[in-house]
Image (cartoon, rainbow, N blue to C red; front, side, top):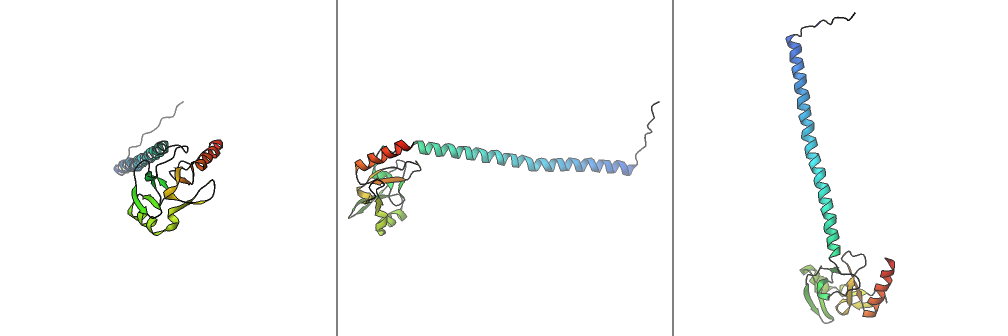
Length: 165
């Protein structure tokens, strides 16, 4: 035989306690949502930012010429040894030849430091003036450049690095 369950009438204080308990649960739920929603948006934003950054980096690298192409000296900042993605640089005339720089600090560096006006040819290991050098993009396609004393050295450099790929 089933047992009868006797309903006990809740007192006013019990109902008040139940009401307060539901209110606390509701407030805690809103508090959790108030934390979860912004954090979710932040994670999504970071993901999109990183994805766009990677795409921009790939686009930047894709816009560079290959190592087999010689770069015009006026497209290189010779103080930072960086290909300036096709943007012409400021002329820095010197008795040793014409150098190029992207900014006033780089112009000063080239004017004041003889070391910055020279590079080492990666094939012959000879010290050469950047003003008289043949220039190509570094094989890592990071935007850095290499300087050569002759077209023949550049061609040899290309052959060496084409075999590495």
